[in-house]
Length: 53
Image (tube, rainbow, N blue to C red):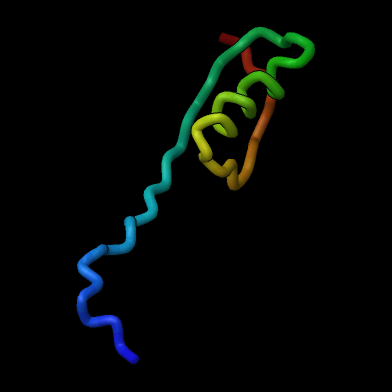
């Protein structure tokens, strides 16, 4: 059986790059990850490095 009455369109996936500059604090990365988890946003990859700002 075909479902010809289905008018729902699949949602388009969007990709974003987010840059965060922070102080080095214990548990901060976990807190940031929780923000995304609560909004049901997957984190594909992380890149961390020291910087001098």
